[in-house]
Image (cartoon, rainbow, N blue to C red; front, side, top):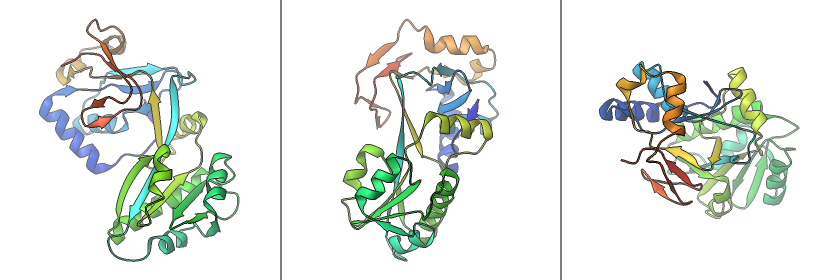
Length: 257
């Protein structure tokens, strides 16, 4: 399995503690069946590594299928003190002013790799640059946010229009991603910053609920079958709430508790 995105250490530690406490793998790790790229479950994979667990239930999917949709997360930063957000992030490389429309258009046609939306102004990286440069600025922005005491949050790309209406927030969004970008990142170990890509998988398998001590004795085929052949599985509609998160796609609840 090849992760394509970095993880958040605090979330990995919290998830590892939850797995240790409950003794189960609740949800499968979803991977591209051809490349082995991990599409969903980077934090679960890192938590298992932290715990020394070598086997995991995986759900392979055909990444080229329409049932797997690639979207993006946007970062929002709210100032609770310290330097001005727009000025600080502009100094990090987002120095070319533009309108919101120009910023969005550049991201969609990939003529711009990164844009900042703040107080009715747009900013983008100067010159024709790519994801490598965009990710360097995203990491710099995260570092600045941590150093300045800003609050960092994540919103889905379809919530960006709403987020930029809040004058207290700066919104950072990367260019339209492709599935090729994801697979290349996984194969080359050139990971995206955390919470950059979002995969909508319909239906998304959840709740395999396999005990950790069972994992070591199961083969890869048996682990996959735990997802593929559950007589008790049921499907929840789009918008269902599952363990505190509301999902955009249908959920395939493999082993209901």
